[in-house]
Structures are given as structure tokens and as C-alpha cells.
Image 1 (tube, helix red, strand yellow):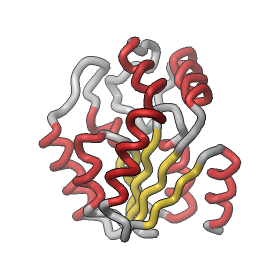
Image 2 (cartoon, rainbow, N blue to C red):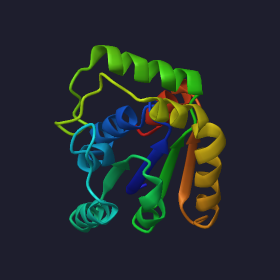
Image 3 (cartoon, one colour):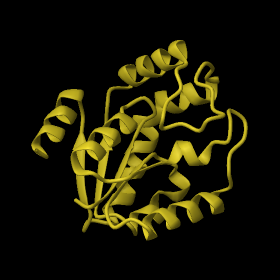
Image 4 (cartoon, rainbow, N blue to C red):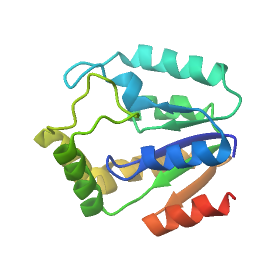
Length: 167
């Protein structure tokens, strides 16, 4: 477990887990949200995202990559040995997103120009449909990469136990 990718619904705890693992393992983190978003309305291109991912993995022997971004998921799989999939209840994810919106605190895993205070209906629908639409696609993609260690975590207790198991 040296080159880790963490995926899951927005609000599932990907960034929190990646920070926890980074502290335990001493691995640098690439937060895809931080490099993809310029601000709430602008982002870099898929090609630029892939370039930044490539530079990160080329310069780090061990690492964590936090984020979904389906358009680059298969690309990232060539660089990792472990994929952690957070399959957290949708209502919990929505509650976490609402807490973020209300607090609107600056987060180290987000781009400086990104504002948490508003979410559009399209984003909320994405979260609501993640377990039924996106998770099966992720599982199907992972079936092509069965040599990768795949860790499914379905609750915060499971996440906590996993993190504790690392010492």
C-alpha cells in the first residue's frame, strides 16, 4: 500500500481519510479538487489535470491521490497499487456537504478561489445518484484492474478501524 487512490461520493470523507493516512504513513497527498478548480465556475482542462497528476506521481515514490474525476480515473489506476473506495450512505454525504456549505470554512484540500457556500442542484443530484450511477462504474472499471488492492469502506467506524489497523 504505497501508491493509494481514494474515491467516493462528494461528502463521503475522502479528504479527511487522505489527511489521516498522510499523517500515519508520511505520504504526500494530491487533492484533485485543489488542482482542478480555479474557482466556483472555472477549472483546468482534462489534459492539464492529467499532466499535473503525472508530475506528482513522477516525483513521489509513495503517495495518496484524493478525488473521483471519472475522466481521469482509469488513467490514475496505472500509477497506484491500492484503491480505497468510500461507500458511505448518501444522506450522510449530503449532511456533510450541507455542514460545509453552512460553515464555508477554507479547507486545505480545496483551491483557494473555491467557495463552499453554494452548491447547485446538479451537484446535489450527482451526490444523490452517486451510489446507483457512479459506484457501479467504478466497480466495473476496477474489475479490469483486479491486481490492484481494493479496500471498500462502508461506514465511518470501518474507516476508523482501517486507519487504526495501520498502526
